[in-house]
Image (cartoon, rainbow, N blue to C red; front, side, top):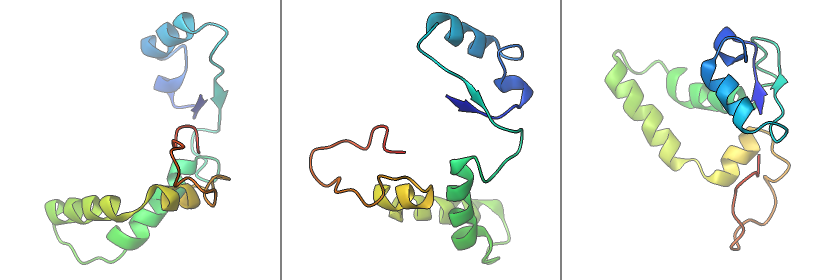
Length: 105
């Protein structure tokens, strides 16, 4: 499991993380990244794409239409495009068969 060093994400700072570590002892490895490292956190790469299309256009003055734009964008991006945005090595694999996208990132 990849985590940043936000206090609530550390075993010391989170009862939930501690309980999960205890339950999955030996099966779960925590890998800590710097607290804020957008280049190492792949979801940031997807947020960049969302912001480029939705928020950087500056066409909305209130939150509800902006949320609607974000939701519309999220419904148009394909799983393959998501994998491309986050730099997954599976982005160009033929996943059109019955293979699942599980663990594709």
